[in-house]
Image (spheres, rainbow, N blue to C red):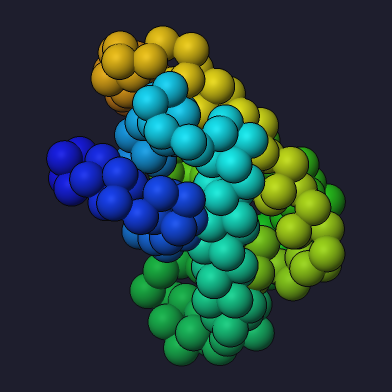
Length: 203
């Protein structure tokens, strides 16, 4: 996949970066680390600029985030409650649980969107609960853009700075991603254990 990505970027330049980053947001398995660091490297031997790459990547990322926000907006809390009415007894869930989760995102959602834009995988998927929580679209765009811009500036700038050694940065980001996935997995397990114990006490 890495060879295909770099060839596509070399062929289509800014437009290629824009399209690949937009696709990466909708399909997280596509590595943004490769796109951004190689995009930075391309500024060392083409007429592309660091600012241009950052702008193209940010626009693509925001487009992808808006698509997932829309998907989450369609799958709203009311629809989830309807599903729980039918299947909740098997899932050991109540509508109150959904309302509590929705209230939590209303309280912390903006900052969640901002900081999660710098965590691999989660940076894309965070747009879905934002849509489900009916987060104000203007603020969603603002926090998404800020978080994305920080991520893009760092990786594109590093890619431009190291030049031909950009693949070493990708290797480092792979380690960062694995650590992030491990932390997320551990957090999910802890939450699941807490949730099961809470349900048992309630019953």
